[in-house]
Image 1 (spheres, rainbow, N blue to C red):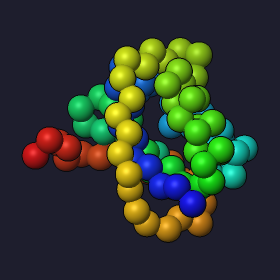
Image 2: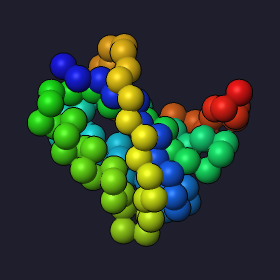
Image 3: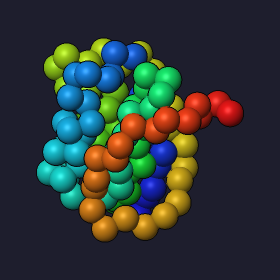
Image 4: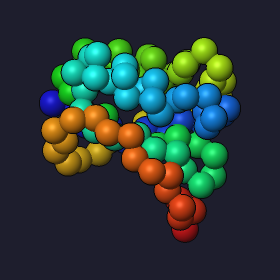
Length: 96
């Protein structure tokens, strides 16, 4: 089981990125969560086997049709998730 933390940069808010990612994750059988961040990026934790996580990473590099992803930051993460949920926007500045 692989668990990764993603931060997706670019034009990723207001383009149905979170809902599209939730649907794709459910289609692939991936658990975790996704939310908007105050800095305009989208943050997610994804968990699944290597192949499905790789598939969702490939999707996240492009996103839904109206998105324009400029950078995808990926780091190892931990936790256990039972489903994939769309969370509310983070209101704190992730840089401190």
